[in-house]
Image 1 (spheres, rainbow, N blue to C red):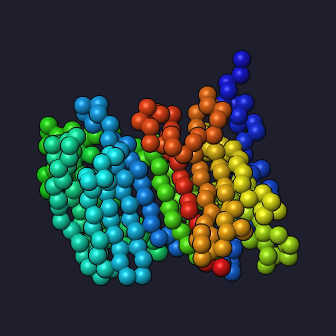
Image 2 (image 1 turned 60 degrees about the vertical axis):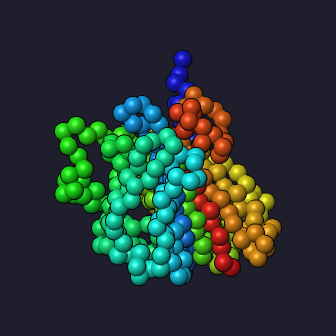
Length: 305
């Protein structure tokens, strides 16, 4: 009997296969459009402590014209939260530490240094920073390229210090601007980081109706024509040996005025097991017993025009 993953992959678009770029060699080339800007990025991490207790941590980076912020939420308790909000000038000089008391953990410690952080156009730093979380003296989450240096210099780790197992299970991005969205995603811990480009265009290319194109590593994996009529849909793709459900909903781009609904579209990439033939539901992300949910990328895209 054939493996069920093999059956699925026959009908899925394989990113590593040359056929996935057969739509058009220019489908991902957009010389006249500037990619939209990220306004907020949220990563949801699952920590498995040495006691086998699990903890969900939500890390959100946000930015607007006047201010910039970082917030960290622990579990489902809204009162157990760390927030760092200030104007752009002072936020980039911030460093320090804070102890947060929790009903579930005797002590949560947050250490951060953003004084030398480097940024692209979005709110999330890309280099020169660290954010370190410790749960009951156990190293939990480490973000940034300077975490190892910080652990060594500040003596966070000793011969008896344990390190929690960490997995990024979800990433959510809020973007605004043109209908061109660029991001990166790693669909599994052992996979590579992939470049993702989402583009809605066609009006400047001689097409009567807009066309949605999604590219991974410069290869077109889907191309949706007559987008006003196909404003919701899904396609299975095959990335790094994993089945990934790609779902889109651009209804509000066409049928809800921006002043009332923001003209927001939603794009989702979600990995699934070959044993699960259903599309994952959004609310299952928060169920701790759903170990099959490996990773999801959710993009909320608002167009200004």
